[in-house]
Length: 323
Image (spheres, rainbow, N blue to C red):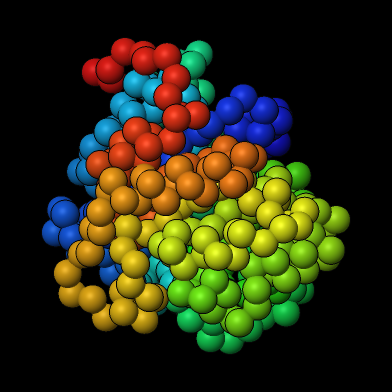
């Protein structure tokens, strides 16, 4: 079934929020065991869906209070073939999980959307590899074939778009964008960076964005940065160039630790929510085109609230609380 997909509202009607660090919240705050850091098995049980609903609810409440939109992610960051197989899920299982994830997101959307808080259903893809390390580096053609397994499924759901999060090198992004284009799906690309502002592959953020745009006819609707603290990439954003205007979203980590340090951490580093909000405020002053604001590892709804309080453009007419 083909679904009509209107223009993405986050590109035309102001700020949109996202959630924070789903997996770190579930593991460190709720004590859940997520095999391979995969949250998608929760979608298979009623109790799991209750946990996910309780997780998203405070973020939706913040968006409602601010009177702004919300981008609601599916819980499918680890639902690709390699990670799925590692924890015992077949290709058919994963396709079913994606459809269930979109259906769950649609249920939440239908319950909580308002005229001032539109909700975008965002099909999430993760890297084939770790997300902190490059590992084997696919060519764009291989990446397109690999990620089409997920994108083909999202095409036939009510997902409004897809976003590839925590990508570590440009060739994988090129393949994902080409697959999304072939399926008629809007796509956003989110790179992660190390403490020096470069991708784990060593590519600069500027080079990665320019490579993807050149290879896809500026295919992504926009780019994002996620899974890095603002202090890791603020100096890069000080540069000039059209590529910076292609970055429309930020989902930063709470912690200033490096990927290597976070990878071996046994306790959550929540950082300083107020300080994180200050970083976002400073970045927004330089990047007037930012429209998607959220968090990543170590952040929860308290960080998102602090970011909203720090960023004046997010202060809109208040609306009713969620019930």
